Image (cartoon, rainbow, N blue to C red; front, side):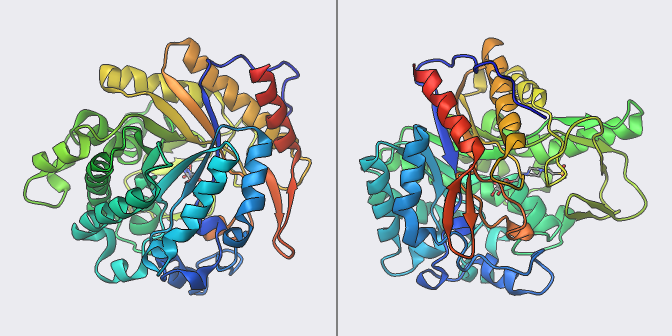
Length: 443
Ligand code: GBH
């Protein structure tokens, strides 16, 4: 797979270019924060592919100045990072984010913090975690604390990262922390995260925020065939992984039949909290489309996941496209159809979109495959713009190689290579390519 030689199409002035990371995946300095659900989870044998933990990761807390320098030299406008709730709970924990935000501002990079990227404080998990409604209220208090400290320099906020993946992987399948295998009994986790978004948005508004978003994972769902058993399974998958999260946020309602399954005395009132004035823009993390068919009769191993036979659908291989080191198919045009699909479904209710994550796992520093992936997806995004979809920004996942959750250090998503033995950072070919592409945008 090779990138085209043609320069990228020109994006509108003010289009926001950025790179993304998350706290647990890069920070290290584990002893300087409260315990997180990921600490105990990754200490359990067999949970993480290479047996690693993120105790050191990219040692970013110590090396943030160098890392901000890499962001600045790349020439992006913005840096999306996440604030570790467990670190904020530790004495002086917000000091680190204070320094990080100062450094970003000093280097001319806009800070875009995400308040929750899967690292729940262990103490909150012991109290029931996202299965408990109270966690949403606690999240709003935490959001207010962070906004009080950083709000004078931060304009753009993201409440949660990928509540869908956190529900599915962390609570339904148990592949991520906290490791619950509740299947459909994990639905309260979805509702409480959505409620947390709504309550946190109110807290951020009270602190003066007017640029609030969420980063949700989305991808087109392809039915394995037009057999009704396959299309019905694909529809259900699409509802659970996509619409269960976007409909309440953007329409103020759950997909048919799902509101009844959610916990709480007054779901209609909760839906108002979730949807009313909580989003100035909507963030989409896109990696790949998913092909789905009727359920099978046995558990299936699929790109690192075990999908139990009890699920009402099965995920199928997408043939005919290159795949990344994760086995995920590379289908840039699916990003165009995803974005136009959002516009078509939500119409006037849709705020401006931002692609808050897009990227791929490949080995190597001369990463021509990553260049081709990014080139293809940036063009696909532009294709949606030309079809009238209001997309305001694009963030690459990730600035640098990092601790890839259950895959440990075995998958490299960075524009910058990290040698974990020495912590040496080496910009890859894709970093140079993106820097050149951004310069050309501005020429
Ligand atoms: C993001 O989530 C995370 O936000 C980030 O922390 C992480 O490092 C990054 O992606 C890379 O993994 O069922 O086989 O079809 C991952 C988003 C969307 C990726 C759904 C897997 C389904 C794979 N995920 N996708 S499959």
